[in-house]
Image (cartoon, rainbow, N blue to C red; front, side):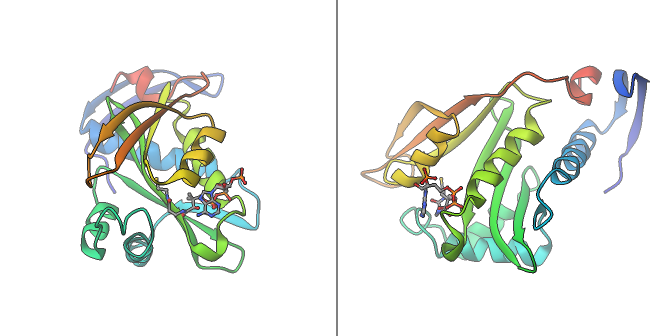
Length: 208
Ligand SMILES: CC(C)(COP(=O)(O)OP(=O)(O)OC[C@H]1O[C@@H](n2cnc3c(N)ncnc32)[C@H](O)[C@@H]1OP(=O)(O)O)[C@@H](O)C(=O)NCCC(=O)NCCS
């Protein structure tokens, strides 16, 4: 990816203290999120990694989605799942174990709900569930976004009690119920969490 524009940063005490941006700010924002993903990934245990998905992993994630609940009940096909994984406004992250292929994914949209980050989907391959991979992925999202946002959102289907319990354990609370939003007889529950305040991200300093 290349950045079509000019970005001038003033660095003081190893931090960006002032910035000015001219040109394609959307691409710059995407690049900054990529940089944050790489930085947070360095903090993970050595036997586990999370990074942006390859094209093959996009297909793998679409396959997992189309054969897993809740998406089977919600009527997600492989093709619509793949379209979602390739949405240019989103980033698809994949978790891999030591000497293992992909075992979990998370699709994130940095300005998905009212300008705040939104976790669109998260899933772990069935044999690897209950071992903390989902928790690691969700905590990874907090770490990426906590410098650029105060709020983060996720949605869960009303019948997905286990995922809802996990999100509540990680600090999310339900703030809205969208009745029969996707299928009759079920609601989508919008959940929210406040992120801890840290030093501001580059784009807040630059105002992009
Ligand atoms: C929800 C999901 C991503 C959690 O990933 P995970 O790696 O199993 O999560 P963790 O191991 O970090 O945490 C497990 C916790 O989540 C809960 N959980 C949620 N769904 C679970 C499942 N299908 N199997 C086992 N545990 C599940 C457990 O109650 C457990 O809670 P505990 O730690 O208090 O015992 C994963 O179970 C999954 O892919 N489910 C199917 C797809 C899905 O529902 N995605 C969410 C759509 S909104």
